[in-house]
Picture 1 (cartoon, helix red, strand yellow):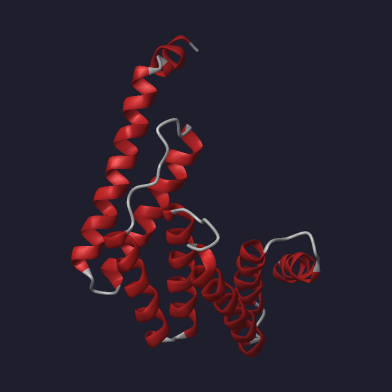
Picture 2: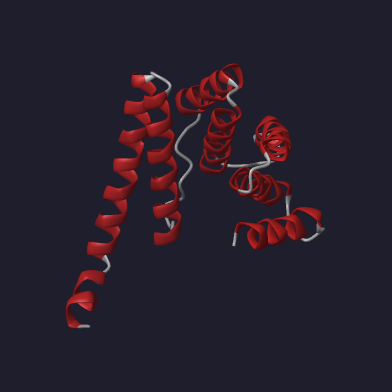
Length: 171
């Protein structure tokens, strides 16, 4: 099963149909599969390439118009990959950048955001908060988890205000 999954990831990584962000995600997944297959050197190489792509994307993301949510997702992935690589310095750099993002970027969630976007953003802030707890950055973790809670509260408020709960009860 892991070999088949690794083969699928390889096809995606080698293809031209994926963005760099998708390629980084596939490389991380391929690294996970290689680790399960007992090839730590290949796993390490794929994860390092994923980290390189994510570093590049987070460096250029603000200039390219990536919103807070996209940047926080990329940084969350980067922190996780550095953790898998055992690169505490890289993990600390990415965490510091996430803190910078938290403290210097306004909430860019549009007023007309749909449920899926709200769920994604809430999950991203939640994951980033948990990573900050692991890194010992409790003030940043509190900020991330507060943003997650606010996003989920908005989702609930929007859902209740739209009458979605009435439809759910009648179904």
